[in-house]
Image (tube, rainbow, N blue to C red; front, side, top):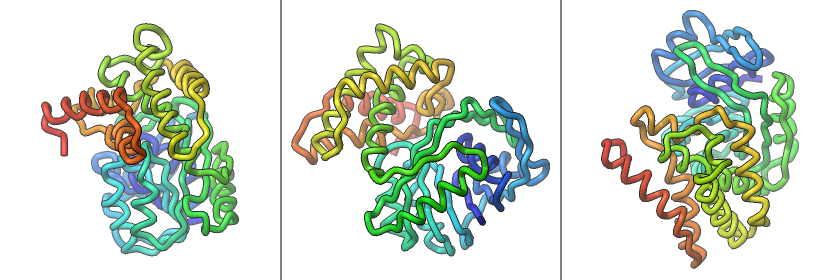
Length: 301
């Protein structure tokens, strides 16, 4: 299978590097990482150590691929969609944070769109080298009801052929809400407190993280997804403990002075709450705090 990984940062590089053990893969990313991969290949260390030789480019325009795996930041999804729409793509699979990405991709592309969630952990150590922090799983499902289930199964098989533990789901919206609830609890709290994920499993941060997650689960229920408060609390604690030594993506963005994905995570919860005539004061407050930091350092909208 010809695979294009659009957004070769930490996760995209790891997934692309693993897929390259079984498929023809092209990474789309930025220099100096792309240049290093072109020159010397991609080194993966951590859970396993291996070297792969995916193609790499900084320009994904006009690309042709059986599968495009989108791993860009949520605020770059529209740009990625425009670029992919100008090429020839068979199937598009989002492995991104937050909600709304699949709608953007669907609006621009005629190809089937798959929603995905993964617990695979990755960190870009230096150009050309990504660390695999934890095996994790990948779950994929069709975003549009009309999309063929066989398409999902074909992509699941492609991931499994590369050694990625992958499953299919028929309810992609529930999958993304479940991931969103966890991210809403962990990401902004770790970013604001500048702590590793494990800190939100213990007081004093556990109360805030769980409150944000429970509030997000309440909005999910109003949006038609069955997700209880108890499930939300348990999910945040489980993920926080399982990834205790990791820094969340939002924490890493804040530490590097970069724009965050707050709008697609807690911001989405707050906006969806307003649309459903509900309130989400904790998620709204966390969104305002992160956006206030972004404006203060000059990386906001």
